[in-house]
Amino acid sequence: MGVLEGKVAVVTGAGRGLGRAHAIALAKEGARVVVNDFGVSADGQGRDESAGRGVVEEIKAFGGEAVTHFGDVADWNDSKGMIETAVKAFGDFHILVSNAGFLRDKMFFSMSEADFDAVIRVHLKGHFCGMRHAAEYLRNKAKADGGQVYGRLLSTASEAALFFDPGQPNYSAAKAGIIAVTNSAAQALIRVGVTANTFMPRARTAMTSTGPSAQFFQKPETGFDAFDPAHTSPLVCWLASPAAANVSGNVFIVWGKEITVLGPPTKAATYHATEAWSVAEVGKHVGRHFEGKLPIKDSFIMPNNF
Ligand SMILES: NC(=O)c1ccc[n+]([C@@H]2O[C@H](COP(=O)([O-])OP(=O)(O)OC[C@H]3O[C@@H](n4cnc5c(N)ncnc54)[C@H](O)[C@@H]3O)[C@@H](O)[C@H]2O)c1
View (tube, rainbow, N blue to C red):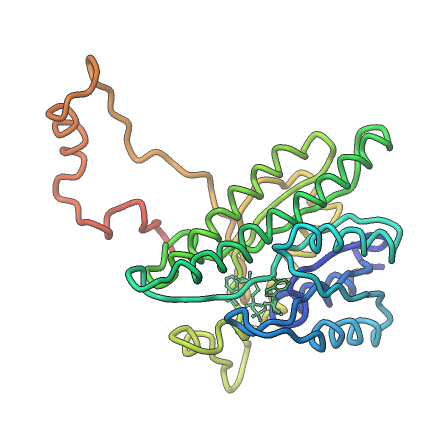
């Protein structure tokens, strides 16, 4: 028996890549799954329902239960419809894995307004919409059921949220925002028993198979394929399971054989003025802090030990 027997999960962007791997892994652990996918290209163009249908067929082929949902995660009504689809098809809803998204990379100084808006919309608003409707369903259920429910919200960020890629100002901001939105949900819902966590995957998918990252994610000719998306899904299943009831508000990095748990942000230094700050006094204290340090390299944007 799987660790998710009796649970109902929604996975967004589950038609291919990481979402497909999570949907299959959740179903193998016994969850009944809504496979959401808008079926767009890696830069968000077009529309194709065949990928989502294919994943549902794959799940049914090993005896699992799944249905499709073809809505846009960043559309308020479509994302509400995802949760409603779960309840209609399987009688309940417990787990949301927010994963859908696409890239529009451009160097900071060349990025268009449209490319900034589109990427913020699909990732950040796309995560918020699904979680917001999931939260409403779970909170209403908790009120009706006497206070506690089973609920797990899992979000997909990226290490771009830690390193602020100069060619991904839209994506880095969206992914950093996803941590904020998820941890807001974590605090709003812990009282009713719902957890919310974020993970940062690395995998070879349509998103990473072209452009500068393609070389890094290449499949080795022999041996362990560290960037197979399937290696990220056991963490997703565990976080979605009853065993992780006390894990909420956390951020993980996951790929290959490695899982990292990130710690909370730390203060590098705090200075106090004797009266109100003057420019000279800022220079005396804060200026001294930066003596001998290098811009960028010795700064907030270069986390240690990565
Ligand atoms: N691949 C990596 O190494 C990596 C690293 C860090 C983060 N991520 C994140 O993982 C997630 C999955 O990416 P992937 O690498 O599997 O990419 P992918 O392009 O293979 O899959 C993304 C899926 O999302 C779907 N999608 C896009 N917009 C949608 C919308 N509006 N509504 C519903 N579905 C939509 C696409 O149709 C596609 O099937 C993304 O959030 C991505 O930012 C990936």
